[in-house]
Length: 458
Image (cartoon, rainbow, N blue to C red; front, side):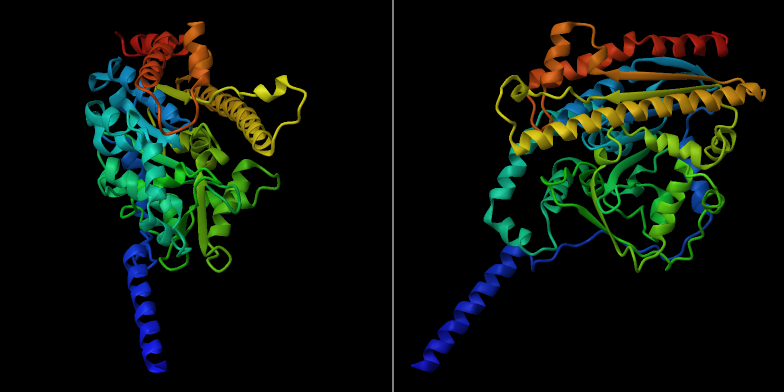
């Protein structure tokens, strides 16, 4: 009898383990972090080649897409549509401004649009709306979360909600694409931004950063990078990156050593210290990446750091094959909304979620305004130095935001659209049309186009 009970318990245990293995996929997730076998200094030159593409070197176009779920993705998509119908003159003849974009830096919801364009180019205008913008992505993610098969996987500790989301995004949008698939001469370099949860450092999925970690960027999943960029803390688990620094022969660029010698506490020195910290694998074996909006919700700081780190604008322009640039255009696409605080109309104290939501919205708004001012002033300063040195160059900063929508009713409706991954067709239509209109009517954008005609003798 005891023997029979023992056999029965073994059978039950075996069946339970078998079912657990089936449902959990052995409680294991295949991480995409592949070590870089051997670093080469030529990889730095590769960055310049990627930025140059088949675009002209007289015009440098930098575009930043902010965070904000499908709202941000739709607003960014509208800007791409307008750029596709705007022509400029270059040494290569008349070209659309879309084809002249050199770098897109994106955060969170904006990263879905930037990465899809970086992967597929003009195909974005054929199927992106149907595949993503007009889908109930949020509802389908919740449905996946409710499936028992995912409960066991999520309970493993090695598989989180962000991993589940990455699998879903890969299925509906990214088709198992890696960063190697973005190496196209006809699309811009795309910088997908996330945040290191442990330090608050902005982490861009770039060649330089992955080289420092001795990670192979080309083999890394675009879907996981976009998920990291949009993994809102508390709602999603972080996306993890394993640090293999010290195993591939990586040598930090000269500017890092120079910056570390700075006596003043500059942004350049702080960034160099961040990279140096990642070179110590024992102290930083893992990176836990969350929404890029935590560090910079506009995506603009990637541009500022790119030019600041080299020491001067001319060196940076030379490194990205734009030494003879005549015009620099920066477009900041900001889909941030105003804080909605109906609780402030009542005497009762706000709840904890209301307090946290308000604090987050206020901090992001204020930090974004500071970022926009820092980047704007920095580029005007650098281009002014070039002009004084005998290198004529213009700089135009274009802000595309809800606040610049002229129609008051449309502006109010835009500010009321929530941060989610499920919008109505009417909301998507309004976002796309408003982005196009704001860009088209921007005085700074028109100044750029008029300067282009004068400089190119048109």
